[in-house]
Amino acid sequence: MASTSHQPVQGMSDIAPPDVALWQMIEQRAREVFARYRFSEVRTPVLEKLELFTHSLGDTTDVVTKEMYTLEDRGGRKLALRPEGTAGAIRYVASGGEETANARIFYMGPMFRCERPQAGRKRQFHQIGLEAVGAPNPLADAEVIALQVHLLAAWGLKGAKIRLNTIGLPEDRAAVLAGLRKAILPRLHELPEEAQQRFETNVLRLLDSKDPVVKKIIAEVPSVIEFMSASSRAYLDTVIATLKKLEIDVEIDATLVRGLDYYVHTVWEVVHGGLGAQNALSGGGRYRIQLDGKAVDGVGFAMGVERVIAALEATGVTASQFAPPPPVFIVSLGEVALNENLLLLQMLRQRGIACEMELSARKVQAQMRRADKVGAQVVVIRGDTELEKGTFVVKNMADGSQREVELPELIKLL
RNA sequence: GUAGGUGUAGCUCAGCUGGUUAGAGCGUCAGAUUGUGAUUCUGAAUGUCGCGGGUUCGAAUCCCGUCACUUACCCCA
Image 1: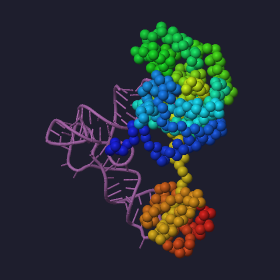
Image 2 (image 1 turned 45 degrees about the vertical axis):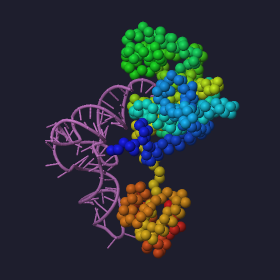
Image 3 (image 1 turned 120 degrees about the vertical axis):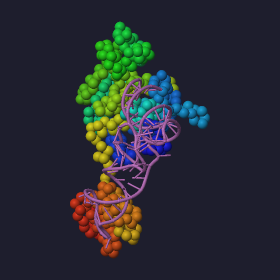
Image 4 (image 1 turned 60 degrees about the vertical axis):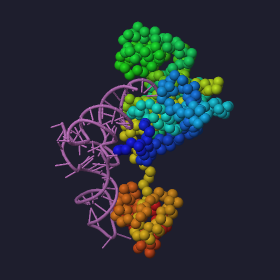
């Protein structure tokens, strides 16, 4: 604390052993759910060519222009730490030919964005993401959303909501922008200066503004969906109808916008109260990514693990609930017993029993305190007397009772 | 990039408008208990008061700078 030299890089942090238990639970249950939906894991490099991201995410997006960690390797090649997982996953898919045309893959791992850290936002953060590759099909979108709901349930997370919207096809974009501008124009002078600028540069971004004045005007303007083509609207309708059949509640929110250029049709977010300003624990949607002249269609989502954890903790879940099982503790009395117990320790471990012991001849009292400290429920005590008799004292820490047994009995007890 | 809050022991924090040797709780270690834990009692160790500079007889305290953490804007998971 006093020294800053041993701290991790700004916005990056260690995940300490007790907390890791929660991470492992999240990852393990995610793997179980993904397996049921027949998705397989892909592990792509953390470092990619810079252009992979500029091409797929869009070279004017904020993520690409001001948030990426970029570097040059010794050969002068421009590289970037991945700011998200879809680009790399799709690069893998695009390189694979036919057999990956309908790939169903998931990934989990660290992502990097050099932003100002705040609640729910780290510079190194972790995502669990999934991509269902294949031609646009509203049923696929619904299936992926259903999977996501399943995932939230598997984690035991309560209170999450899904906000759903469509951003239509690229062909709709011009009509949407024009329609929106036309609707807002009469009230443009009411907007704050910053918002007026955005009216020119990126009208869509006015939709999810946090400014109360902007919000009010946006609420009175027709929904973006109304400016879209009939086929885009039909696509959305099918997604909604399918979700209804699957009994999945979503909130249609026409102000939902996404910051990456590759999205088409369905987009959604999973939000949770009690997360601070960054209330989205997942973002997802359908996309079309052009790579080397090849278009890859798919639908997917990415969940921010740190945010999922924050949401779980906000609902009373703690890492200690997923702590590893308590160990058996071996107490030694005297040097001779200490050495003999080392053999016992290894023998028990080889039988699959988690156990530990003090590796120096400390006082019994200190060893017992240690046993209690690490949460041992059973303590095996062995000193000279027991060595002579070939017995072990087994103590139950909960009620304090103990009995003396021989080896076969000991193994049966543990 | 912009704005607010905070940096004192391993952890959580107290330290009033500057005044001698900088505190508490928890944790750690040890003793009470020479072979028995969570309770109790007793004791011990650990601080360049984030860092650098300034004002002052004197700075943890005031001023300036800087770094870090934190919250929010922007944007996003």
